[in-house]
Length: 151
Image (cartoon, rainbow, N blue to C red; front, side, top):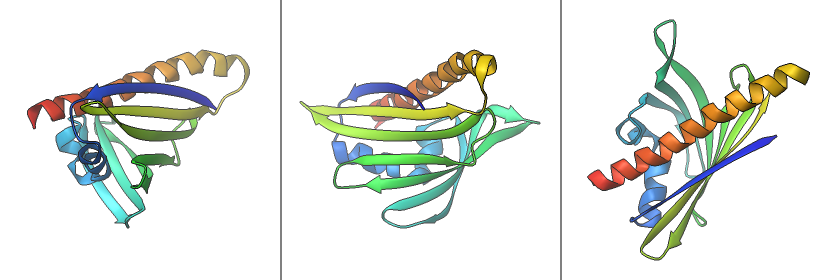
């Protein structure tokens, strides 16, 4: 399994950011590249969301995937697991960590992934998938910074 880690510091409350990230219905307002989010069911500790991402399209439709969110409110941790990831991914998981630091918070986003390929194909695909996931992770964190500046 491979890991990518990106982080950002913002001037905001730890719990405000945590609540923002656990309220997936607001994702299209926070993350402009999400065109829709539909909850399939939720409770305090677990949320399933069907998300559509607008910048990727397949046959003119937004790229869709289903993620499961596991929430640890006490420690401000959010774990996500993509259900049935698309090829070439074998698995795609993430961990959001939110820490209070000085007058703000550090948001760390770690993605863990593996690829459905072997040998030379895997060696070719890995750097490409890594670049895409890191770019998307950076976009997510930059969107939170922009949202924080607007509010």
